[in-house]
Structures are given as C-alpha cells and as structure tokens.
Length: 566
Image 1: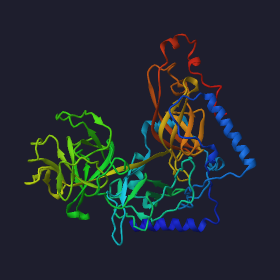
Image 2: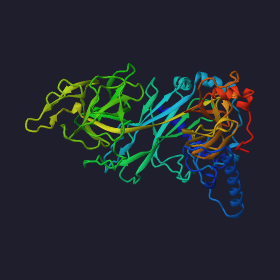
Image 3: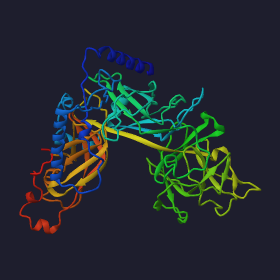
Image 4: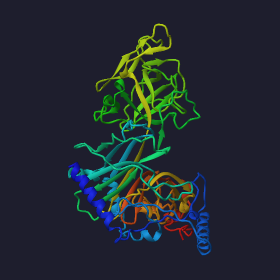
C-alpha cells in the first residue's frame, strides 16, 4: 500500500511539472507593505478613526502607484496542478478566481451543531539537536501528526491519504512588517509518513539535521494528498509546524535565566523520555493511554504542562493547586498535567542528575535536554535523603523506586537508568477546516489561524481586531451563524471586522438578557470554514438603558452610519 501511495504521489508530481508550461497557475498576492498595520494593542478605537485611517491608506496606495514603484512580496500557494509550488502572488483579483460559493446561515448552523470538520495537529519538540559527521541524531521525541474530527472517518477507512514530511523553512512566513517573504525553498527531501493501521497518527522517526545546515531555526512541512479519491484536486495542502530551535548539544554549564529560549518556564509543555543504556531502541516516553493511565510508550509521547508550585504547598494532594510564574529550577515542586486528558501525577520535586546520581543541592534553572529525576514529595521519607522515591519505569509501567544515598556525600543519591528522564519543551500546530459546500478545487492551505481578539468601541460601533497568521483578502469573519457586515483585511496578521448586531445573531431575543458567547470562524470565498478557538461575548445592556429606550431596534440598530469598510 505504501508503494502504491508513493507511486501515485510521484505520478501526480510528474504531471504537475509537465503541465506547468501550458496551464496558468492562479495568482494570489498580499497587499503591499504600505497597507500594513502594527500589531494591535488593548485600547479603544472609535469607528470614525478606523474609517479615516482606511481612507488615508487608499490615498497613500493610489499616490504611490502613480509616482514610484512599489515592492510586492511573493508567496507560493500550491495548486492541484503544482503541489510543490509556492511562488504565487496574492492579490484581491486572484481571489476572485476562486469559485464563489457563499456559505449560508443554515450551512453554518448545521456545521456548528455537528462539528464534522477535519483537524491536522503537528506535535514536535521546540529544539532539535544537530548531527555531526556520519552520526544521525534523530529528532526525539519524533514529530507526530494526528488526524482528528469526523471529517476524516471515510478517508481513513478507504486508506486514501498519502502524507509526507520534511525539514524546511516557514512556508507562509510573515516578516516584521506583516508581509509574506519570498524565495521559499525546502532544504530536505520529503519522507513518507506512515500511519499505523486503524490509528490516526504517524511518527517521523528518521528526521535529523546535519552539521552542514547552518540555520538556527527550522520548521517541519507536512504535505497531504488523496491517492484513490476521484476529486478535482487530490492535493490537500502543505501544513507547517511551529518554529524549532537548532542546538548543537545540551549545555553542561550552569544555566542562567538570561538564556530564556533554552530554559523551561512554568505553565509550558514538556515531554519526558527515558533511554536505557543510551540505546535508541530502548527509548520510552511518558504517555497517558486511552484508559487515562500513565505508562511508558515506545510509540507515542505525551505533552505535559509543567506547573511550578510553592514549596510550602500543603502535602495533601488535590486537583486544585496554586501555581507560580517563573522558570523551573532544580529543587522546585512541580505538577505534571497531561495536556490532552488533564490527568496528573502527584506532587514531584525535580532534581538534577549527573551520571545516574541525583544532586540534591542543585538549584539552577532546568534547561532543554537535561537529565533529571522526579522525586515524590509525599514519599515515605521526604525529610532526608534516605529512601527517597523517584518516578521510574518498569517495562511499560510507571512506578516508584527508592534511591540509594551515597555514604560519603550527603547531597547525593544514586539511581538507576529507569529513573533518569530527559526533559524537552514541546509545541504544536493545529489546523481545522470544513468544506461547507463540498470538495474545493484549490488547496485548503494556507490555513488562517486567529490567536488573539481585541474589542474596539461598543454598541452599534463595536469592532474586533483578530491577530494571527496566514490571513488573506478572501476571508470573512463570522460570529456564530452570522456573517460580519464588513470584514477589513489589514495584513497577513491582522483582520478587523464589524460586530453584527445582537438582533441579527439572536432574532428571537429583543435584547441581551444574559452574556451570550459565539464562536469566531473565518470563511473563504469558495466555502471553506476555518473554525478558530476564539469567542465573542455579547453582554447585557444596563436595565436603565433598556427602560428608557423606545424600541429594541434603537438599542441594536441593524445598520451603522459609520461603516469603516466604505
């Protein structure tokens, strides 16, 4: 089956290269840097100011176009005929080439009710160790791609997906001005990413970066396509991971919080793995299985929040605990919580390990790829170094094992390999979409990702500013089942949208009786819905305002004279 998928992928790639001379690729271009806006801040911005600013931008662009030449940035967007291409211009006209298939209120309501979307999640470490000479230091933990959502069910049953992964640079990178960078290249060949039978994840276990690669940061690129599905466009798209820092080797020097990129902060996510006798084949990862049980897995790894606790925290275990900010230091009390299942381990004290020996007096910051041990805070003898119990593995089980105090060294405890863990920070990139009007003829990437929302103004003049990545002129913002009256594309990182009146969102309610939250979605011109993790909340009007107002329409007028999109 793998050979069939690779053969199909090669055939489609050859077809794309042979047809590029006779078929014109649709172009997409972002606005010039003159139309950019600095990242948003939390402040009040009247609607008239937005309108006047928009007019000034238009005048500036017109004068620039008539006087001097402007610089445009290029961004490659793969198409069904060129899945490897990225050098396509983004502009408003090219988005009109996308088939106009508007999403109706009924379609959006049905989607929000069932949520039959598709999600691609890329889990990976935040740092990668470079290989030297002929050695191959494979990424550990291995990057994993998970598929979730009911939209994948049929495709998985038919085994019709081909997934590839490579090490490269950002595909849809935004520079400091918010404009996409050009000349995007990939630095390594695509590798097939196999998915285990009946499971929704695949692990890339043979990725490494050589010493000839001088980059300080990299990204992982995941290409997905259909192999036996008769679609107009078998190419799904190219998904990228978050940024990964390249390091030479774990630092043995005492770390300083000044090197924040390598230190581990409270509230961030980490992975833990154990490697007996330094052999790759014996690597086991801390993981929570389908039964919500902690175990040591050779195939899957878990991402855990590491919370810094007060060392004076009561010894009584509880699901409610107070956390502290700052960097995690050796000797600190921590709480490990699974980021997927919320299952947690008991209170632990993180200790530095040097050659299978625990250093009880170390208090330096915990750094990437350090060897460490986790001492049960509520162990049988937590007041001295005798019989301290440490988190360890026994085959695939997670158990506790007692350390052996060193006779002549008060602050040293010997432990075996099974209690030595390597710690590393992790990250994930998640992309969700739904083809509301059926399969589309263009790739669904780049997927717009909205990370923050700021509300400006209030009442009938309220707007929201969304910041994130991969925004484009062809997107519209939806509040639940209702489309925004006006969506204003500012840059690849910022979109401003007018908040629809509550009477449009909830026609059966004359006014807001209680706080009502609506999910924020982005919809592309050809009918793709990109659900975000953001919500907008309508809050009730004061009772006095409702009493003195003659009609609900006056409270929430259906239109506004100050339309900043005009």
